[in-house]
Amino acid sequence: MYTIKTLNKISERGLSQFDPELFTVSADADEPDGILVRSADLHSTELPRSVRAIARAGAGVNNIPVDRCSERGIVVFNTPGANANSVKELVICGMLLASRDIHGGVAWVKSLAGSEVDVPAAVEKEKSRFAGPEILGKKLGVVGLGAIGVLVANAADALGMEVIGYDPFISVDSAWGLSRGVRRARSLESLLAEADFLTLHVPQNDSTKGMINKDTIPTMKKGVRIMNFARGGLVETADIVAAVRAGHVAGYVTDFPDQVMVGEPKILTIPHLGASTPEAEENCAEMAVRQISAFLEHGVIRNAVNFPECVLDRSGAPRLLIANKNIPNMVGQITTILANEKLNILDMINRHRGEYAYNIIDIKGEPSPKAVEKIREIDGVIMVRTLEAQ
Image 1: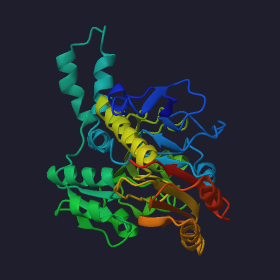
Image 2: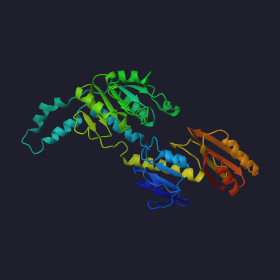
Image 3: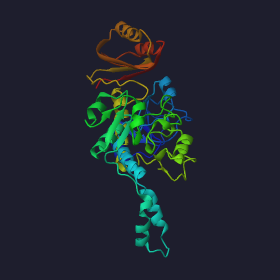
Image 4: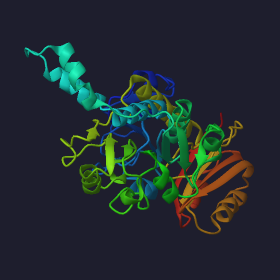
Protein backbone atom coordinates (compact mmCIF):
# COMPACT_ATOMS: atom_id res chain seq x y z
CA MET A 1 0.00 0.00 0.00
CA TYR A 2 1.31 3.44 -0.96
CA THR A 3 0.48 6.69 0.83
CA ILE A 4 0.02 9.98 -1.03
CA LYS A 5 0.04 13.34 0.71
CA THR A 6 -1.83 16.27 -0.89
CA LEU A 7 -0.56 19.77 -0.16
CA ASN A 8 -3.26 21.67 -2.05
CA LYS A 9 -6.81 21.03 -3.06
CA ILE A 10 -6.46 18.49 -5.88
CA SER A 11 -9.30 17.75 -8.29
CA GLU A 12 -11.43 14.86 -7.04
CA ARG A 13 -11.63 13.60 -10.59
CA GLY A 14 -7.86 13.37 -10.61
CA LEU A 15 -7.63 11.69 -7.22
CA SER A 16 -10.20 9.12 -8.34
CA GLN A 17 -7.56 7.77 -10.74
CA PHE A 18 -5.66 6.22 -7.80
CA ASP A 19 -6.33 2.52 -7.34
CA PRO A 20 -8.01 2.41 -3.90
CA GLU A 21 -6.56 -1.06 -3.27
CA LEU A 22 -3.01 0.27 -3.68
CA PHE A 23 -3.14 3.90 -2.58
CA THR A 24 -4.36 5.92 0.38
CA VAL A 25 -4.61 9.68 -0.03
CA SER A 26 -4.47 12.14 2.85
CA ALA A 27 -3.54 15.75 3.51
CA ASP A 28 -2.24 14.70 6.94
CA ALA A 29 0.10 11.82 6.04
CA ASP A 30 3.34 11.94 8.05
CA GLU A 31 5.42 9.45 6.03
CA PRO A 32 4.07 9.54 2.48
CA ASP A 33 5.56 7.69 -0.47
CA GLY A 34 4.52 10.50 -2.77
CA ILE A 35 3.37 14.11 -2.65
CA LEU A 36 0.81 15.79 -4.90
CA VAL A 37 1.12 19.58 -5.03
CA ARG A 38 -0.09 22.56 -6.99
CA SER A 39 1.19 25.89 -5.66
CA ALA A 40 2.40 25.08 -2.12
CA ASP A 41 6.02 26.14 -1.59
CA LEU A 42 8.20 23.19 -0.61
CA HIS A 43 11.53 25.03 -0.46
CA SER A 44 11.37 25.51 3.30
CA THR A 45 9.67 22.17 3.94
CA GLU A 46 11.54 19.21 5.41
CA LEU A 47 10.68 16.32 3.13
CA PRO A 48 10.20 13.03 5.02
CA ARG A 49 12.70 10.28 4.25
CA SER A 50 9.81 8.17 2.99
CA VAL A 51 9.15 10.42 -0.02
CA ARG A 52 10.07 8.83 -3.34
CA ALA A 53 8.25 11.15 -5.75
CA ILE A 54 6.61 14.56 -5.99
CA ALA A 55 4.07 15.34 -8.70
CA ARG A 56 3.19 18.94 -9.53
CA ALA A 57 -0.30 19.30 -11.04
CA GLY A 58 0.93 21.96 -13.46
CA ALA A 59 3.89 22.75 -15.66
CA GLY A 60 6.10 24.99 -13.50
CA VAL A 61 8.13 23.52 -10.63
CA ASN A 62 9.54 26.74 -9.14
CA ASN A 63 7.85 25.87 -5.85
CA ILE A 64 9.74 22.56 -5.55
CA PRO A 65 13.41 22.21 -4.47
CA VAL A 66 14.32 20.15 -7.52
CA ASP A 67 18.08 20.04 -6.86
CA ARG A 68 17.57 18.84 -3.29
CA CYS A 69 15.14 16.20 -4.52
CA SER A 70 17.58 14.99 -7.18
CA GLU A 71 20.34 14.53 -4.61
CA ARG A 72 18.02 12.23 -2.65
CA GLY A 73 16.73 10.35 -5.67
CA ILE A 74 13.25 11.85 -5.39
CA VAL A 75 11.67 12.03 -8.83
CA VAL A 76 9.85 15.30 -9.55
CA PHE A 77 7.06 15.15 -12.12
CA ASN A 78 5.14 17.94 -13.82
CA THR A 79 2.24 17.87 -16.26
CA PRO A 80 3.30 19.60 -19.49
CA GLY A 81 0.46 20.11 -21.92
CA ALA A 82 -2.33 19.24 -19.49
CA ASN A 83 -3.38 22.89 -19.25
CA ALA A 84 -2.28 23.80 -22.78
CA ASN A 85 -5.73 24.46 -24.21
CA SER A 86 -6.71 26.62 -21.24
CA VAL A 87 -3.63 28.81 -21.71
CA LYS A 88 -4.06 28.89 -25.49
CA GLU A 89 -7.57 30.28 -25.18
CA LEU A 90 -6.40 33.01 -22.81
CA VAL A 91 -3.53 33.93 -25.14
CA ILE A 92 -5.93 34.39 -28.05
CA CYS A 93 -8.18 36.43 -25.78
CA GLY A 94 -5.18 38.50 -24.66
CA MET A 95 -4.16 39.15 -28.24
CA LEU A 96 -7.62 40.51 -29.06
CA LEU A 97 -7.64 42.62 -25.91
CA ALA A 98 -4.22 44.02 -26.79
CA SER A 99 -5.36 44.89 -30.29
CA ARG A 100 -8.75 46.43 -29.58
CA ASP A 101 -9.35 48.37 -26.38
CA ILE A 102 -12.28 46.23 -25.34
CA HIS A 103 -11.24 46.36 -21.69
CA GLY A 104 -11.06 50.17 -21.71
CA GLY A 105 -14.36 50.45 -23.51
CA VAL A 106 -16.17 48.18 -21.07
CA ALA A 107 -14.73 50.08 -18.12
CA TRP A 108 -15.87 53.40 -19.65
CA VAL A 109 -19.43 52.14 -20.18
CA LYS A 110 -19.56 50.94 -16.57
CA SER A 111 -18.51 54.40 -15.45
CA LEU A 112 -21.74 55.78 -16.90
CA ALA A 113 -23.84 53.84 -14.40
CA GLY A 114 -26.05 56.12 -12.30
CA SER A 115 -25.33 59.20 -14.40
CA GLU A 116 -27.80 61.34 -16.33
CA VAL A 117 -25.93 60.70 -19.57
CA ASP A 118 -27.84 59.50 -22.61
CA VAL A 119 -25.91 56.23 -22.85
CA PRO A 120 -26.70 55.32 -26.51
CA ALA A 121 -25.77 58.79 -27.66
CA ALA A 122 -22.59 58.83 -25.56
CA VAL A 123 -21.56 55.46 -26.94
CA GLU A 124 -21.92 56.62 -30.54
CA LYS A 125 -19.92 59.75 -29.78
CA GLU A 126 -17.07 58.11 -27.83
CA LYS A 127 -16.68 54.63 -29.37
CA SER A 128 -13.81 55.72 -31.63
CA ARG A 129 -11.67 56.19 -28.50
CA PHE A 130 -11.55 52.41 -28.11
CA ALA A 131 -10.97 51.38 -31.72
CA GLY A 132 -8.14 49.04 -32.69
CA PRO A 133 -6.89 46.93 -35.59
CA GLU A 134 -8.05 43.44 -36.56
CA ILE A 135 -5.67 40.52 -36.18
CA LEU A 136 -6.49 39.05 -39.62
CA GLY A 137 -3.40 39.15 -41.81
CA LYS A 138 -1.11 40.39 -39.05
CA LYS A 139 2.16 38.63 -38.22
CA LEU A 140 2.28 36.71 -34.96
CA GLY A 141 5.67 35.67 -33.63
CA VAL A 142 5.52 32.60 -31.37
CA VAL A 143 8.64 32.06 -29.28
CA GLY A 144 8.65 28.49 -28.00
CA LEU A 145 6.81 25.68 -29.76
CA GLY A 146 6.00 23.28 -26.96
CA ALA A 147 2.51 22.07 -26.14
CA ILE A 148 1.06 25.56 -25.63
CA GLY A 149 3.04 27.33 -28.34
CA VAL A 150 1.92 24.84 -30.97
CA LEU A 151 -1.75 25.25 -30.02
CA VAL A 152 -1.45 29.05 -30.10
CA ALA A 153 0.33 28.99 -33.45
CA ASN A 154 -2.27 26.69 -35.00
CA ALA A 155 -5.19 28.70 -33.62
CA ALA A 156 -3.73 31.97 -34.92
CA ASP A 157 -3.10 30.37 -38.31
CA ALA A 158 -6.75 29.27 -38.40
CA LEU A 159 -7.77 32.86 -37.60
CA GLY A 160 -5.96 34.07 -40.71
CA MET A 161 -2.79 35.43 -39.14
CA GLU A 162 0.65 34.99 -40.65
CA VAL A 163 2.39 32.92 -37.97
CA ILE A 164 6.15 32.74 -37.50
CA GLY A 165 7.56 30.28 -34.98
CA TYR A 166 10.93 30.02 -33.31
CA ASP A 167 12.17 27.12 -31.21
CA PRO A 168 15.66 25.68 -31.75
CA PHE A 169 14.78 22.76 -29.46
CA ILE A 170 11.41 21.81 -30.94
CA SER A 171 10.49 18.18 -30.31
CA VAL A 172 9.48 15.73 -33.01
CA ASP A 173 5.96 15.50 -31.54
CA SER A 174 5.57 19.29 -31.57
CA ALA A 175 6.85 19.52 -35.13
CA TRP A 176 4.32 16.90 -36.24
CA GLY A 177 1.52 18.82 -34.55
CA LEU A 178 2.37 22.20 -36.07
CA SER A 179 0.17 23.56 -38.86
CA ARG A 180 1.75 23.72 -42.32
CA GLY A 181 0.91 27.39 -42.40
CA VAL A 182 3.37 28.22 -39.61
CA ARG A 183 6.64 29.60 -40.97
CA ARG A 184 9.94 28.85 -39.23
CA ALA A 185 12.00 31.87 -38.22
CA ARG A 186 15.69 31.81 -39.10
CA SER A 187 16.54 33.29 -35.72
CA LEU A 188 14.92 34.92 -32.71
CA GLU A 189 16.22 38.28 -33.95
CA SER A 190 14.48 37.92 -37.32
CA LEU A 191 11.22 36.93 -35.61
CA LEU A 192 11.31 39.94 -33.30
CA ALA A 193 11.91 42.26 -36.25
CA GLU A 194 8.91 40.95 -38.22
CA ALA A 195 6.19 40.41 -35.63
CA ASP A 196 3.15 42.66 -35.21
CA PHE A 197 2.22 40.52 -32.22
CA LEU A 198 4.61 38.53 -30.04
CA THR A 199 3.74 35.71 -27.65
CA LEU A 200 6.18 33.93 -25.33
CA HIS A 201 6.00 30.22 -24.51
CA VAL A 202 9.40 29.26 -23.14
CA PRO A 203 10.49 28.17 -19.65
CA GLN A 204 12.29 30.67 -17.46
CA ASN A 205 15.95 29.82 -17.03
CA ASP A 206 19.33 31.52 -17.20
CA SER A 207 19.15 31.86 -20.99
CA THR A 208 15.58 33.19 -21.18
CA LYS A 209 15.23 35.36 -18.07
CA GLY A 210 14.72 38.98 -19.11
CA MET A 211 14.80 38.09 -22.82
CA ILE A 212 12.45 40.99 -23.56
CA ASN A 213 14.37 44.04 -22.40
CA LYS A 214 15.71 47.47 -23.31
CA ASP A 215 18.04 45.91 -25.86
CA THR A 216 15.60 43.58 -27.63
CA ILE A 217 12.52 45.85 -27.62
CA PRO A 218 14.04 48.47 -29.97
CA THR A 219 14.66 45.72 -32.56
CA MET A 220 10.89 45.13 -32.75
CA LYS A 221 8.38 46.98 -34.91
CA LYS A 222 6.99 50.20 -33.49
CA GLY A 223 3.49 49.36 -32.32
CA VAL A 224 4.20 45.71 -31.50
CA ARG A 225 1.83 44.04 -29.05
CA ILE A 226 3.34 41.52 -26.62
CA MET A 227 1.69 38.68 -24.69
CA ASN A 228 3.40 36.88 -21.84
CA PHE A 229 1.49 33.94 -20.40
CA ALA A 230 4.60 31.84 -19.75
CA ARG A 231 6.66 33.33 -16.89
CA GLY A 232 6.82 36.86 -15.54
CA GLY A 233 10.61 36.94 -15.44
CA LEU A 234 10.91 36.59 -19.22
CA VAL A 235 10.16 40.31 -19.52
CA GLU A 236 12.02 43.07 -17.71
CA THR A 237 9.24 45.04 -16.03
CA ALA A 238 10.90 48.47 -16.02
CA ASP A 239 11.86 48.12 -19.68
CA ILE A 240 8.41 47.08 -20.89
CA VAL A 241 6.76 49.89 -18.90
CA ALA A 242 9.16 52.42 -20.44
CA ALA A 243 8.55 51.03 -23.94
CA VAL A 244 4.76 51.21 -23.54
CA ARG A 245 4.91 54.76 -22.21
CA ALA A 246 7.16 55.78 -25.12
CA GLY A 247 4.73 54.25 -27.63
CA HIS A 248 7.15 51.73 -29.09
CA VAL A 249 5.08 48.88 -27.63
CA ALA A 250 1.36 49.44 -28.29
CA GLY A 251 0.25 47.01 -25.60
CA TYR A 252 1.46 44.39 -23.17
CA VAL A 253 -0.75 41.64 -21.75
CA THR A 254 0.60 39.45 -18.99
CA ASP A 255 -0.65 36.82 -16.59
CA PHE A 256 2.00 37.88 -14.06
CA PRO A 257 1.23 41.32 -12.61
CA ASP A 258 3.53 43.22 -10.30
CA GLN A 259 3.30 46.52 -8.44
CA VAL A 260 5.07 48.51 -11.17
CA MET A 261 2.67 47.45 -13.95
CA VAL A 262 -0.59 47.90 -12.09
CA GLY A 263 -2.38 51.02 -13.27
CA GLU A 264 -0.48 51.38 -16.54
CA PRO A 265 -3.25 52.10 -19.10
CA LYS A 266 -1.70 50.12 -21.95
CA ILE A 267 -0.61 47.15 -19.85
CA LEU A 268 -3.34 44.62 -19.20
CA THR A 269 -2.57 42.61 -16.09
CA ILE A 270 -4.45 39.34 -15.64
CA PRO A 271 -4.31 37.58 -12.24
CA HIS A 272 -2.56 34.38 -13.36
CA LEU A 273 -5.62 32.79 -14.94
CA GLY A 274 -3.84 30.72 -17.59
CA ALA A 275 -4.74 27.37 -16.05
CA SER A 276 -7.77 28.54 -14.09
CA THR A 277 -10.41 26.43 -15.73
CA PRO A 278 -12.03 23.33 -14.23
CA GLU A 279 -10.94 21.38 -17.30
CA ALA A 280 -7.27 22.34 -16.88
CA GLU A 281 -7.27 21.57 -13.15
CA GLU A 282 -8.80 18.16 -13.81
CA ASN A 283 -6.41 17.39 -16.67
CA CYS A 284 -3.36 18.36 -14.60
CA ALA A 285 -4.52 16.33 -11.62
CA GLU A 286 -5.28 13.26 -13.70
CA MET A 287 -1.92 13.42 -15.45
CA ALA A 288 -0.03 13.91 -12.17
CA VAL A 289 -1.85 10.96 -10.58
CA ARG A 290 -1.13 8.67 -13.54
CA GLN A 291 2.56 9.56 -13.49
CA ILE A 292 3.15 9.15 -9.75
CA SER A 293 1.09 5.94 -9.73
CA ALA A 294 3.10 4.43 -12.58
CA PHE A 295 6.34 5.34 -10.85
CA LEU A 296 5.43 3.93 -7.45
CA GLU A 297 3.79 0.79 -8.85
CA HIS A 298 6.16 0.01 -11.73
CA GLY A 299 9.16 2.33 -11.43
CA VAL A 300 8.59 3.94 -14.82
CA ILE A 301 9.31 7.63 -15.35
CA ARG A 302 7.39 9.91 -17.67
CA ASN A 303 7.56 13.73 -17.61
CA ALA A 304 10.07 14.05 -14.80
CA VAL A 305 12.02 17.30 -14.64
CA ASN A 306 15.10 15.88 -12.91
CA PHE A 307 15.46 12.30 -14.18
CA PRO A 308 15.31 10.81 -17.68
CA GLU A 309 12.22 9.28 -19.22
CA CYS A 310 12.56 5.57 -18.58
CA VAL A 311 9.81 3.11 -19.47
CA LEU A 312 9.96 -0.69 -19.47
CA ASP A 313 6.86 -2.88 -19.65
CA ARG A 314 6.43 -5.23 -16.70
CA SER A 315 7.39 -8.82 -17.41
CA GLY A 316 5.95 -10.12 -14.16
CA ALA A 317 9.44 -10.61 -12.69
CA PRO A 318 10.90 -8.85 -9.65
CA ARG A 319 12.14 -5.38 -10.56
CA LEU A 320 15.14 -3.43 -9.33
CA LEU A 321 15.12 0.39 -9.61
CA ILE A 322 18.32 2.38 -9.25
CA ALA A 323 19.05 6.12 -9.49
CA ASN A 324 22.67 7.17 -9.64
CA LYS A 325 25.09 9.87 -10.63
CA ASN A 326 25.86 9.71 -14.33
CA ILE A 327 29.46 8.52 -14.02
CA PRO A 328 31.41 5.72 -15.78
CA ASN A 329 31.06 2.02 -14.94
CA MET A 330 27.88 2.31 -12.90
CA VAL A 331 26.02 -0.30 -14.93
CA GLY A 332 29.04 -2.59 -14.86
CA GLN A 333 29.28 -2.47 -11.08
CA ILE A 334 25.54 -3.13 -10.68
CA THR A 335 25.45 -6.07 -13.07
CA THR A 336 28.56 -7.57 -11.48
CA ILE A 337 26.85 -7.65 -8.09
CA LEU A 338 23.78 -9.29 -9.63
CA ALA A 339 25.96 -11.86 -11.42
CA ASN A 340 27.81 -12.70 -8.20
CA GLU A 341 24.42 -13.25 -6.57
CA LYS A 342 23.53 -15.57 -9.48
CA LEU A 343 20.63 -13.32 -10.47
CA ASN A 344 19.90 -13.44 -14.18
CA ILE A 345 18.85 -10.17 -15.87
CA LEU A 346 15.72 -10.73 -17.94
CA ASP A 347 15.43 -7.17 -19.26
CA MET A 348 16.82 -3.77 -18.41
CA ILE A 349 16.95 -0.16 -19.47
CA ASN A 350 19.42 2.57 -18.53
CA ARG A 351 18.86 6.23 -19.33
CA HIS A 352 20.61 9.41 -18.29
CA ARG A 353 19.76 13.10 -18.11
CA GLY A 354 22.44 15.58 -17.25
CA GLU A 355 24.29 14.44 -14.16
CA TYR A 356 21.77 11.75 -13.18
CA ALA A 357 20.89 8.30 -14.54
CA TYR A 358 18.12 5.82 -13.87
CA ASN A 359 17.93 2.05 -14.32
CA ILE A 360 15.07 -0.43 -14.47
CA ILE A 361 16.22 -4.05 -14.20
CA ASP A 362 13.93 -7.07 -14.30
CA ILE A 363 15.60 -10.10 -12.77
CA LYS A 364 14.90 -13.78 -12.34
CA GLY A 365 14.54 -14.35 -8.62
CA GLU A 366 14.22 -12.00 -5.69
CA PRO A 367 17.38 -10.01 -4.88
CA SER A 368 18.60 -10.61 -1.35
CA PRO A 369 18.83 -7.72 1.13
CA LYS A 370 22.60 -8.22 0.98
CA ALA A 371 22.66 -7.69 -2.79
CA VAL A 372 20.50 -4.59 -2.51
CA GLU A 373 22.76 -3.19 0.20
CA LYS A 374 25.86 -3.82 -1.93
CA ILE A 375 24.30 -1.87 -4.78
CA ARG A 376 23.30 0.92 -2.42
CA GLU A 377 26.92 1.16 -1.23
CA ILE A 378 28.29 1.77 -4.74
CA ASP A 379 29.77 5.26 -4.87
CA GLY A 380 27.36 7.39 -6.88
CA VAL A 381 24.20 5.38 -6.22
CA ILE A 382 21.56 7.62 -4.61
CA MET A 383 18.43 5.44 -4.58
CA VAL A 384 17.66 1.72 -4.74
CA ARG A 385 14.17 0.27 -4.67
CA THR A 386 12.80 -3.19 -5.31
CA LEU A 387 9.38 -4.22 -6.60
CA GLU A 388 7.99 -7.68 -6.03
CA ALA A 389 7.02 -9.97 -8.88
CA GLN A 390 3.53 -9.37 -10.20
